[in-house]
Figure 1 (cartoon, rainbow over the protein chains, first blue to last red):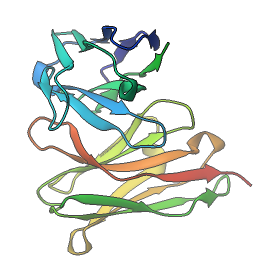
Figure 2 (figure 1 turned 60 degrees about the vertical axis):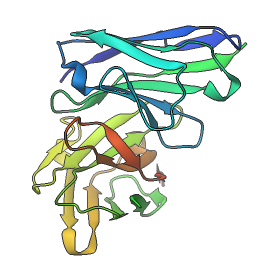
Figure 3 (figure 1 turned 90 degrees about the vertical axis):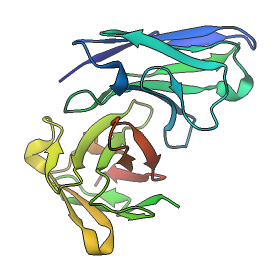
Figure 4 (figure 1 turned 180 degrees about the vertical axis):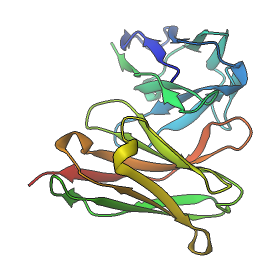
Length: 108
Length: 118
């Protein structure tokens, strides 16, 4: 199984700050199959970025993603209060699908 | 519109069998695969298994010996059965639809909390 090492495990940021999360895969994966989700407390995960860099419907432009091979990143250019959540990367490149361990974003 | 809804018991005794149902609407189980994902309290997401649109299944290797996923396409339902439950199986169980070409999860159920306790 492909292991996704996500870091950091938690971030404390100020509103307006830029934050970046990295997701490193144990094997190379196609960028088509690396995705990012946002999960708020008590809710199901919501797709934010699909195929490395494409924003899902309705997702603000402050969210972006990049990467290739084994190294991927997710960025919020200017954090807003509503972005407080846990973020997960997920690969669909090979079975079994796997998730990163998550990054919890909190506001300072 | 696309919807998924999990149902099942909230409390299961240790060593017993868990049976969950995911009832879907707005799409066909023969067009989209459905996966189960679980989340222990305060922890991350764990892929449990899938039933592919063609009807075959795949399971998390750590759960494979205890797990079965099936479906009834006429009722638009997917079933999860897991036996020999342990306290570590306490989690929210989500069913989710897979986008068929890029393999991400585009629609989710609200999840059902399953507690394993005597």
